[in-house]
Image (cartoon, one colour):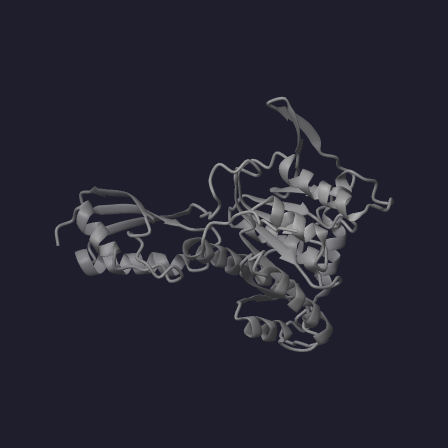
Length: 366
């Protein structure tokens, strides 16, 4: 086969994206094809920098080129990414944010904020642009988890309107009521006031361009949750639970809320936190303190993916208290679990954006 751009694309049209079930050429993922003498170079544009199948796709491309043109050709493949979005364009709120991810739980104490913080870190480590909103107005934890309890955001003006500039720590943009109120003071607000604060975090904050904005929601199903889906188009939701029966019972309510006909936010998957205990001195041992595979049972019941099983180890608690999230440390069982969560969630977002309708604000008639 003659070596030219047309035939290169023809060869690469035999390579499928394993998740989207279409070939790379049809998906527009092949760019910058360049041929010079006996050298071929091109770029594969993935749907997320957190793609767990990056190496598989690269090897499939090499195999397709070798099949078409032989093994003597020198092939250089650049793997890059452009995160997809299913948001309607020209939306006035968060115009530069591609995907908005709600992290929810049915009850408190399941580690939802820990999961949100470490998910944000793990996504950022892949090269994605990430923001995190602490929407738990009455129990903010992001300032502590990111070691910025004494910081306060600045304000800027755009077109005559004031906007809050989110704090940035470890490469992640952050917003929390904890930055605006003294940590020792209780936030004693009625529901509408809390909802108004969340709307300000979303519409009056200059988030800029982000691939993923993680929303750490309070436990349960409340005004805050309805305010979120009525204010901005949510790409999808993660449900955090622990394995025991009482947590699963409440997690079902969180799933049911997002799946209500008038809300209809896609569930990207379940995160089973505190799935098992592993002592640092016995890393191969697993002790199921709160039961086993409860998150898997919930995922199976609702036909949604189990994205990760996060162990309970002392270092997670220590990292949260010290303000240095556990996912930032390399080569640990915890970092590996959060890396898997980030990859699986990003994969789910890409599949959701390719196959489902564009996201819209929820219109609930009362």
